[in-house]
Image (cartoon, rainbow, N blue to C red; front, side, top):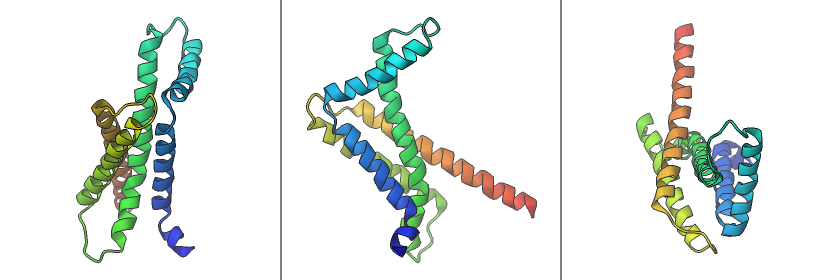
Length: 158
């Protein structure tokens, strides 16, 4: 039990990866239905305000979901990588931890797209890997900035 307590961010990362995996395992028709519900809601809420056709909105929602999932993953990979490297006695620069977090998330994006290739009606797209990788980077940068800001405030108090 104490192993899990010391690896709480690792457990969260695994849960996020599982969520992404199961979303990617949905056949195209089910996945389209899910995103279609979101699109219909957006169209109803912003009817007459958004000058975007339904097909463009579907694209934005689907790619936005990719980016958002991977932004969350990237954010949680930052402390998870710190957990992974805590066992090593050799100190690692923070920049290397951040690069490792981004690379881990990007590698997962690649495996996720390969997984989709085998799901009925889905495909493996380089564009999605790029979107996912940018999402991971955004998550890593946001969390890194938050940590930096928090540490700076702590130093200013002293």
